[in-house]
Amino acid sequence: MAEAITVARPYAEAVYKHAAASNELSQWSKMLQLAAMIAESGEFKLLVGNPVVTAKQLGEIFLEIGKSKFNSEARNLLMLLADNKRMQVLPQISQLFEQLKAQHEGVLEAKIVSAFALEGKQLRKLVDDLEQKFKRKIEARVSVDPELIGGVKVEIGDEILDASVRGKLEAMAIALKS
Image (cartoon, rainbow, N blue to C red):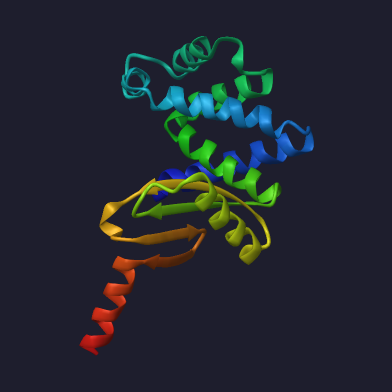
C-alpha cells in the first residue's frame, strides 16, 4: 500500500496545485472521487490486468464509463495515467488530494470510534471540544465499536485521544505489571 501512495503523491500534488490555481478544488474533488470509484470497480480491475487491452484502450474505456463527468484536463490526466500504467493508484490520488484540500481549507479529519452510537447533541459537543482544542474545523467520521466498553477513541492525524473504558483498563493493566 505504501508503494501505491508513493506513486500517487506527485500526481495528487500536481492536480491539487492546478485545481487551487484555477479555483476548482470542489470540481476536481468530485472528478477524482468518481475516477477512484470507477478504478475500484471489479470489472475495471479485470481490464487493468488484462494484457490484451492496450493502455490507450484502457484510458478510452475509462473515459467512456465516466462520460461527460470529466473536463478536458481530467481527461488528459486519466489518459496519462493509462499510458503510464498507473490507473490502479486513482483511489490513492483521490485520497491524497482530499487531504491536501482539507489542509488548504483548514479542516482536520477526525476518526471517532465510540462504544455506542453518538446522538446529534453528543457528537456536536465532542466536535466543538475538538475544534477548540485543535483551533481548526473538524470533519468527523464516526463508527461504533462495542469492544471499547464505554467512551470514545479519537484519531486526528498522528494524535490519538483514547478516552475509552477499554483503553483505561489496558493502561491500568500495564501499570500493574510494571
